[in-house]
Length: 244
Image 1 (tube, rainbow, N blue to C red):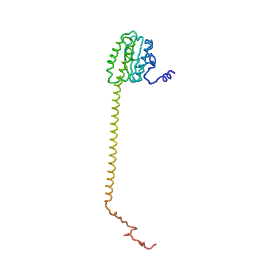
Image 2 (cartoon, rainbow, N blue to C red):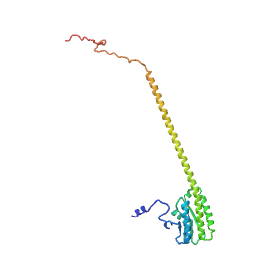
Image 3 (tube, helix red, strand yellow):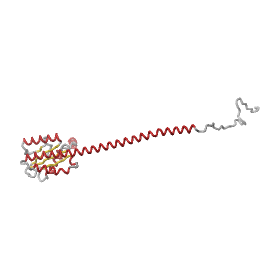
Image 4 (cartoon, rainbow, N blue to C red):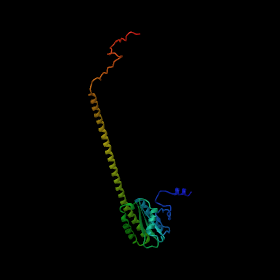
């Protein structure tokens, strides 16, 4: 029974882990179990995040926790991003109540495989520096989420460029293979076209040799019949002597 439930409950989607202790992803992309944000601010931020995700495919999640114990904030943000992140690029803005060194930003997705991933620490550092200058927590979170979406849009362009370059290289390789195959086909056709005339020439030569051979009758082999010194012609009679 356990195995059956496991098979039925498993699916290949990567976005949400069924074993994630914080449960499924919130519909408004804001995880705030303590409801530390005002309803108006939560709705405004949630609408902005949903709009960015649908229009720019820049998936940003805001996570507000009362405490994380001794865990590193970057580690916690990465776990949320790995469990809830969608699309090709996604990020988490994490803030912990009672801590003055937040928020924190973690960026994940296809950008981790790009050749521009080294710019992420500098860009997130600049975004956090500006966000921490805001006078209150809600303004700080809004600034961090907007700047994080800007980072994702920038990185999305870089990743898209890499994908286009890769696709162009694949297209050129495919074209080269097609050209090579066409050249081989032409060579085979040319070789076959050369064999046919050669066979015709050999046939003509053989015919000429056959016609030019010696034109004489074959030698006649004479044999004696019934001990006669010579063969008889038409109506020839052989005398065998009187019968006894």
